[in-house]
Image 1 (cartoon, rainbow, N blue to C red):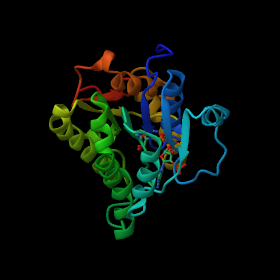
Image 2 (tube, helix red, strand yellow; image 1 turned 180 degrees about the horizontal axis):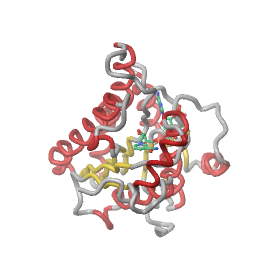
Image 3 (cartoon, protein in one colour; image 1 turned 90 degrees about the horizontal axis):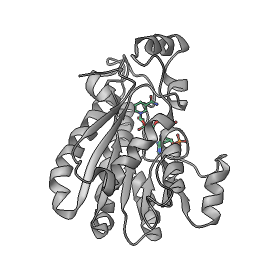
Length: 256
Ligand SMILES: NC(=O)c1ccc[n+]([C@@H]2O[C@H](COP(=O)([O-])OP(=O)(O)OC[C@H]3O[C@@H](n4cnc5c(N)ncnc54)[C@H](OP(=O)(O)O)[C@@H]3O)[C@@H](O)[C@H]2O)c1
């Protein structure tokens, strides 16, 4: 694994870190010495693993909640996160989910707005609001979680979710060019089919087994498979010449 001092003295923000991929990303940053604002998702009053509370008691983790599917839901989160740090070295925009499977002809305005707000607009809002603190770093990295579905279109009922992830991938490439003069690198991690609560909600066992069989490495992914790519992209001494890229973490599910 990475050196335990790789992110010593670094200020990191990870959204959607109360469970799943984001939780493992936060854990690995903490293991490597970072101070981490852990956006716990919509609520702070859930059971979280002990390591988060331990790091919180040592003032290395700062747990902050916020509902990003609500209009303006990012504002309070960013205000609270900005209180913790005078500069941000790493921003991981990871909060997101499908919210449901919505057949194209039945999609309501409200469903459309919520999926776009959570997976697309919140990334723009959080990034925009934190730019002064990211610029203050001089060597910052932004890493956005997209999805294999941004390239493939995903499966039925996920059209708006998949398109919103494609938006974030393109937004990230544009920002990479725009923010390079500020010393900010911008990249994406694109997970394939990763076993988290996400698929508990949106995919049947049969669908997951069929997917597993189709993957060249013959297994579904885990949060532990994904997290090291975030740390690699965050570490200037490992990936300092990489910006504007999307790294696919999918066991070969998509090779193109
Ligand atoms: N698992 C996969 O196969 C897969 C594949 C491709 C991309 N992804 C992407 O990877 C990221 C992490 O997903 P995951 O698999 O780790 O899923 P997960 O276990 O469901 O975690 C999602 C995280 O996002 C947060 N979140 C969801 N809705 C929110 C809202 N309205 N406001 C604020 N936070 C909210 C969740 O908080 P709550 O506890 O409040 O819900 C949770 O912390 C997401 O962006 C997802 O789209 C996942």
